[in-house]
Image 1 (cartoon, rainbow, N blue to C red):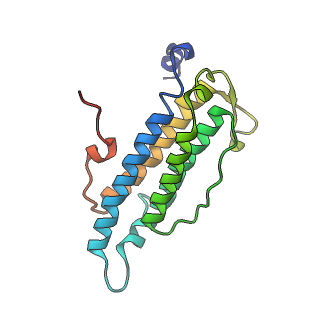
Image 2: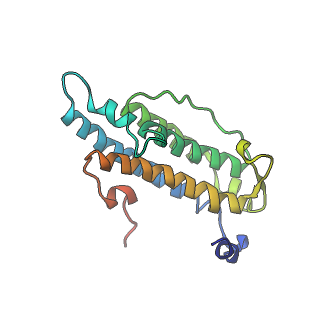
Length: 184
């Protein structure tokens, strides 16, 4: 697959268009998915425990992060990726959300940050060096970072959040995940 991405030649790519608007749309869809999760949780609460708490702490398998962390990490990927590609400081958000409403506020803060990123801050950054603390001093190009790490990792956490909610019976479908199409 690496060879296929190389064929796409960074000169033919607009990193802004394939990252910022795509992540913003997915985060907006995730917020709407959380609306459905909140309504579903409200319908399932018991006098002893809210179903919302159970959803926020549920995971697909024991060694994965729970729903709340999946949402936070998707947001962290979006803001961190945008900042790295724009070569600006990554904003710091508290990661202490305990309710769906608080997670939605976290998404809104992330979307507000993404709106501050202008295309000219990212277009042409295909060859910058991007490094993460856990890459042991190694780096990728901006193009490789965006296409081989940022976007796959971002969507991994969005889809895992979706899957946790589906597993718990929240009435979601593919259209909720896709978030609508610009059909003409």
